[in-house]
Image (cartoon, rainbow, N blue to C red; front, side, top):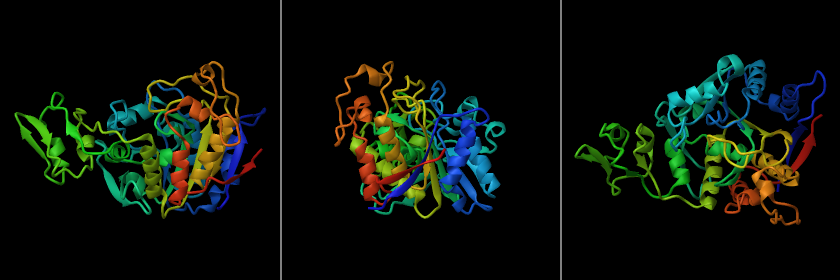
Length: 375
């Protein structure tokens, strides 16, 4: 099995040495300059943070990455896709407002924000998944697929469905359009909550299979005709269309890995995980619980699987903060070597190993890594 290099710098700084300077030095040491950026569109895949959540990455980190890319001749933009759940980021205009509210705008980051799957979350491309077992195609936001290069800039944290969120999840789940997110989260086909339907008929415009009809001013979906693509979910501005047939956490983790492979295959890519304010839940929450471990540092490299595994190991090796949800629980889970498994203690119903194992199986990267410390 191949061993990938993962580069690491801690959070310590001295007079005249900011963390932002350390980040720039880290990504250079990790080899970002090996990529030919000249006159290339560069998607910096980021999570803008759900308003109310305070654990998301500060825009200062994004500016360092964008400035370095521009210095190498690239044309960067910050991007994310709309969410499936009802919130402040489930359609393009609100999503941009949320990004601006959280400090992400060109004056602070040095580049533009682009919502990759458009205003309604329906602007996507079907991308074949090489080696996909759970999905054969991925519905990916068009702007992300239009880019020549993908850089993921990730806040590493816990996640209630997959155990953790890092580079693989940001590239996979985060790049899925609303239809893609439905495909990852759900099995089966969508249905209409007719109490919320206003009969606007916009959903029918996005159905390529003639599966949506109207009676009494309300929509209904013929599952015999429906292909399960989920584009009607993205098209409905009233959130009247959904899918309650949720897939298992194992399937969710594997689908995320497959979507990440669809996004990254055939293009240069590079990944950065910031392991600070390690919240137990995703930054999609409109709140952020107390950090579960002390701030650890920043990791970077070309292999998203090795990067995530290095971050998991670092979090599991760190002391639990007693004032967090992790500190409240009996920390009885152990890994194969008998060491504490904080990720499992936080979310006992998930197994973070599922995502790592499947990502490795389909050739996305390696769980074996060599850690290189950058001072």
